[in-house]
Length: 319
Image 1: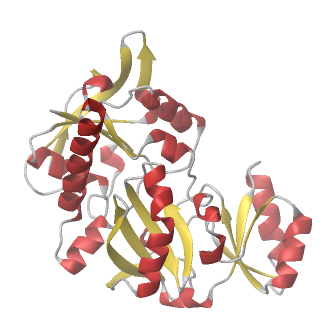
Image 2: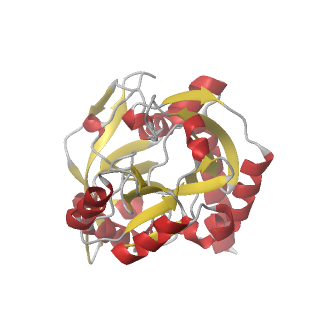
């Protein structure tokens, strides 16, 4: 049995916090032969879809005990499972790989579905649910920003396709760097950026909720460093144990049908106060932190659900 993983190169991953490595280890524990590759390694010809890939093997249950075999051409059509867990940003190499992986059809169970990923940029999918997100503006227009800032005194500005808390700023008219921050976003890329009403509850952090096959599994509260508005672990946020509230569950229920419709099997959502602030579909994190705080095994649950869903789909296509 073969399983393949489109991820960042394993040697660049932080084995203490990375969420892809435990999923691959669980795959090995279930008897799969596992391969890893990056978007630029994918190609197709008249015989199918392929990738230059490395077999990955763990010597023990320790996540930095892996070795990588020499690169080989892997026919992705022969995989039982293929997992797309590439970190943003969405660039053309990434988008092209999604188009090529889409050609694999129904025999390969792809998590998350490449069409679903392509149609669900992480800060855009949430716009389908205006009642549960903060007031939001997506623009490159200084005039629109001016109007928005008159309505809300404090704003958050961030890249539309960023991740890990990179380039997230508190924006207020009183800030002497107000114009410079906006100019920096305008000069940095040709893309629109996202501006949201500042949510004061961010001082208490945000809640990352992991959703598997439409069902909320567990959560963790991420607390920002002192004098920082970002709670991402990549920028020094810490994590504490938390529970899912009625509001959290209501948010999960609100987006559930949209996730299932787009075959978004594994999703991480961010909640601040009563607001949904992001839907992560490319490489949801915090598996390790939730496991440690709650003494659970998210990777095991993940695989149980993935196999059950694949078997269900196989029955449908056979009938």
